[in-house]
Amino acid sequence: MRTMNSTMFLYSVQEKYADAFAKNFTTVLLAVIILSINGVFVLTFFRSSIFYNDPRYILYIHLVINDMLMVFFSVILSVMAYVWQNVPLPFCVTLLIIASTTHKNTPLTLAGMAVERYIAICKPLHHHQICTVRRTYILISLIWGVGVIPGLADLILLSIVRPLSISSTVTSCVMNGLYSSVVWVILVFTYCQVLIAARRATTDKSSAKKAQSTILLHGAQLLLYKMFVPLLPVDRARLTFLNYLLTNILPRLLTPLIYGVRDKHFYKHMKELFSCRLFIVKVESVKK
Image 1 (cartoon, helix red, strand yellow):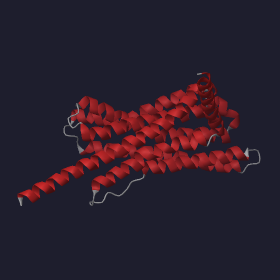
Image 2 (cartoon, helix red, strand yellow):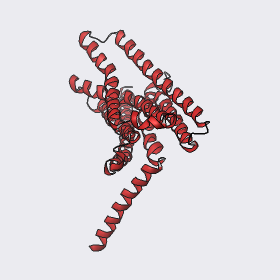
Image 3 (tube, rainbow, N blue to C red):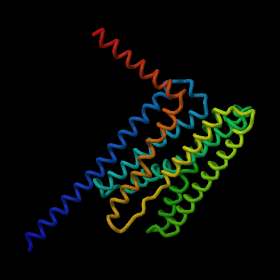
Image 4 (cartoon, helix red, strand yellow):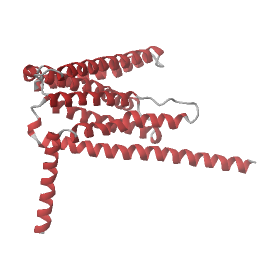
């Protein structure tokens, strides 16, 4: 009987470690793929100075860099949960606040990008006056300021009340609900305004249609970020992991595909950059 129990315990431990390895391998692999793809778009942006003065591309690259930070820190936290149990509190709290802030920055940046498209289509004569580079960077600073508030609020409550009381959870839920509501209102408003503008004779139909598609894609992205897989009592851990992949990791692949590849202007510069690099490599290899 004891031999059977010890054998079952051994299998249980092996299964536990195999499951942990599979989860960590999956998250790290996806993170490497996402960071590599997004890194290509960041390199394209910084190697092409033409994008520096366009608020649309500044907001786009902020979204890409923000997603890269979010993936990097969330994967570190995920791996740490398995391999480093006794993490120093200040270090852990810092990582959590950064991951939480970058997670909240994404929908706020999407809202900002939708507003920029609304101004470009519905108020084209005022677009260059309203959407300046300086104001774009101010908006990005505000996004980070607003995104960090819930994390800092939790930290202050944690410092005052130990253990963390239910009020902190309620505050966090209220803040998340407020963020989501504001972003959805902005997306619906901008989409409706662009739809109305598209029907006017004076509006550039092609630009308006592209703006509509972009705002709709913003909504699809937001749905993915807010999607939730029901956590059933049966195999709760695996469903939690699946939920983490679907809402935190995989949507970050959409950002470069939606904007970088879909945007002909950006895609053209990316092709030129890598065609040039490929040509240089070929020339050097021929010389050798």
